[in-house]
Image (cartoon, rainbow, N blue to C red; front, top):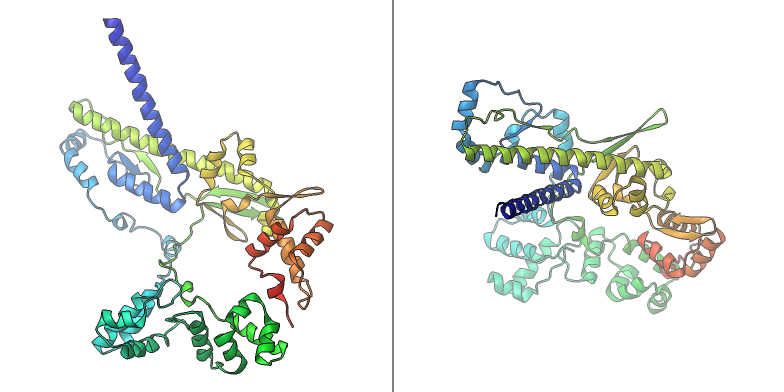
Length: 458
């Protein structure tokens, strides 16, 4: 009987240890894939939840018998305190002015907020203001009005003429083209704002926007009895207009991007460091180390909190070490990319880096997820160090190199006789780069370069 009990206890102990290890591993995995701002939030949250965590820059706790007695008496109160809402700003009041400047970002208003602010200024009449507010709320992300005037009139208790009048005022707001009901009206509003809604440009906006999109300039010239060069000039003007005037505004203010790794060049040598200066340094509090006189429940609670604190600290240290190793390997393999940019990017996969470091590919993927490196030439995502390969006679070129080559070829072409994708593929082949026509088309589109028909100049 005792043997069976011993076996069962051993099995239960192993299962418990396995669950604990699994939870610790899951935490380490989650911590690894956090960006620096996300990790800072994680640390602050853990600090507020776990009374056994201390910031290393805090004053060390004075140890005395009365301290431990007070700690035991106030433990229940502390549990409630750490579970309650807490203003982290109070804790970080001592943050330096430099850190404040780095962490702060200008407050960017959304399109709706900008327009409502203008509505508040422009409309004194409450009835008109209510109609304007309804119309602003009926704009989509492009800045187009998506509600028919009749529906807007019913919703606001106004007649259509009044709604149309208010819409006209709204369309005078910035950005030009806002409040349009379709592409034609959007282009018209921008041309009118520029004072050039006349002649051939007006005709093209009213009747030929589809032909402009398709690059059928000769057909437009024939239909309007205009010179091909004049059509080209009008097209150039249209291309300065925005078909989606509201797209310049995000739904939310852009977040400040903080680097996770920083690379500096000193006397020709690379120096890489994980950016931990904004992260609080944690340690396990010594306040509760003397638990001999505490009751069993309190001792268990403290033991659990100590374990959780140590596990978090280990996970953060492991994240920093893994991130450093991966970043060093990326910089070592992509030195030309670091110094010269995307055109010098070499083929490199996560699998290659993982094999070199003796890691699993998923570990490398988590290490670079949502993280940025501060290079001498600017901030870039760590993921940008990876690139698929395109075959060449002498090995392989990265997708970035092929895109750069395509861009250079198109930049040097005769604008009156732009190169087709097939012709570009042939020119790449002459340079030893094997790329199919469809590959050329894909990379050209990624560069934002239109087709040869739409690139033609007259």
